Image (cartoon, rainbow, N blue to C red; front, side, top):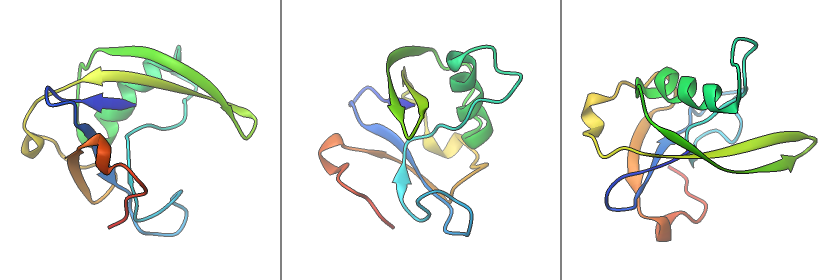
Length: 108
């Protein structure tokens, strides 16, 4: 998901730096795989930010989908300009709104 605020910054989380985590220790947008109970990619998109940071009821708009290594990746966009301190990390080690110009490969 690409979640932006009113300043057009992108909400990113710092991925856990532990074995089994895809690209550990890097900044990434929130997202994840569909679960059997998810009725659609949009349902997955609503569930993931809630699980990862407690962000509920965000309105998402489908942007596009791509084939990545044989599976479809759906990219969704949402807007949220709340206070980061109100979110609770369920995954990752930090949260930040990042200016798009600074989105070149980010590490801790």
